[in-house]
Image (cartoon, rainbow, N blue to C red):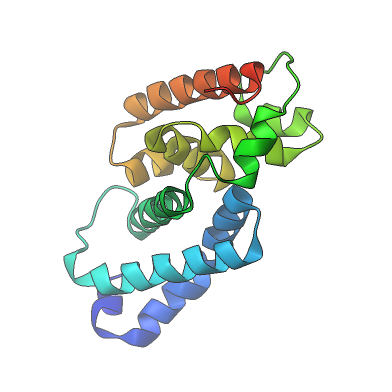
Amino acid sequence: MERARADPSAFADLYRRYLPRVYALAYRRTGRVEAAEDITSAAFERALRGLGQFQWQPGGFGPWLFRIVANELANHYRSAGRAASDRARVAELRLAGDAPDDPAELVGARDDVTEVLAAMDLLTPRYQKALSLRYLSALSTDEAAAAMGMSKATMAVVVFRATRALRRVLEKGGDA
């Protein structure tokens, strides 16, 4: 990591290491190749520009990078406007049903993953980040907590509350 501040080839190594996971998170969250590419590009650009200000935290570079990705995702949805998105319209049309506690089970239990992602769009940015980092980017609880800048216990509470909020949105058919 320290080498990357002065040596572009060292940052290229970090880029190659994290690119698949960053892109996968962006794609799973947006469902669109173009948006995922834009978010991935913007996140790595911000990371490169911010290397000088990076201070070593628990977990290292990965959680810091995923925090940047989560912020880029939030910026994407803020600029796109939640209410005008296709996913918001899909969530409004959703049929009512019982939802499991774990968002990963929600995705597996539904035929249309877009429905769950649309419901996530209706959550607060903090809840969106927590669920995205924990479940869509395959980060461990420790890594997700570090990316959110909080303790593991606080992360667990936020994920629990976000899951409960997601379940409520899904049960109401997208009416937040």
